Length: 403
Image (cartoon, rainbow, N blue to C red; front, top):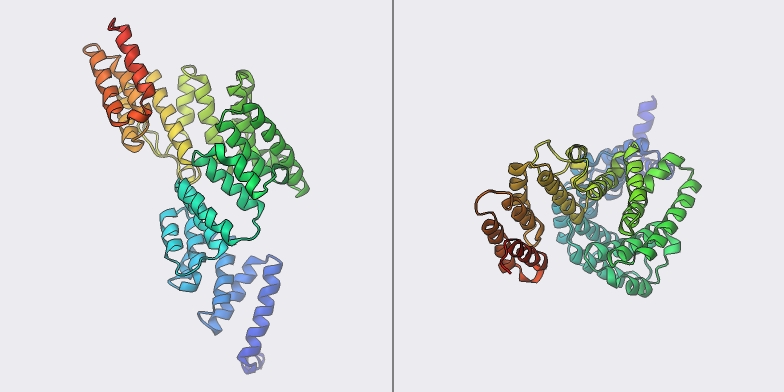
């Protein structure tokens, strides 16, 4: 009798009751219940966009992004959701393709997502352009958008423009610890380490206040602010406070970091290794091995969780330092192979060629000629960034008595 009574309820009334229930579950963050209710609605009205969006959001929040992506299908009204699922799955090229396929005027959330995808793809100038489009569309922008724009300028090598940008957008670092952190990165990039340190200490203080007010445990606060700690250590090293920097990096590496913080751990590892130089080579190589996709000395890809999180500049720096470690460890064959891979990957960088020249100088026959051949080839192809290469050529000639 109960089943018969339910069947007699008009569809419109059933839907009204289910949508009311769904709203309550969403407001209460009862994700599993919201997922079940949205599926019940879709059984009655397959293809209902509101129910589909609720189902997709619930799946995403439940970390079931692959299922959320499958739910999107080819529905044109769900392009934003589809692009976001691809973004969460680190399928950045596909996410960008979906973003660009949207016809007509793009919504602010879609523009912001497209900018973030471009950021992940290390296409900083395009990222900045999309943020410019977003700013023209929005009368006011959130501190989150402002923070991301500043980050894009830093990654795009335009740190010197950040002060004017922040003034134009009326951004204040005291309003956001993330903004203070990115402003510090910009100041650091232009060599103003004292001001950068002040901004980092501000970011650290603001971050602790905000996160502790959210009842986050102190251990988690420390982990959340790990990038600031790493950047403070870098500033200390740049100012000659080597012991302080080493202590800070070591303290970061002792923390039991969650997956979302491992990119900061990787940067700390890289900076620690660079600060050590030719000391503690075995330990440095072991630390790098933990970050790579496989233990091969010539591996040039990182663990999956790092490949999607590290910026292009961080990856480049880390791979070059790994190659230098192989050089200092007298692993000539592995160093040569990796340097060749890096020369093909980073075509406008002189570092792989400087390393190859250093390897050539260790050979017994024709060392100077081989080294100069390597360097002159790069200088001819990239005269605008060949100053260090030309200096090394001069040093080699001087050492051989060819003044």
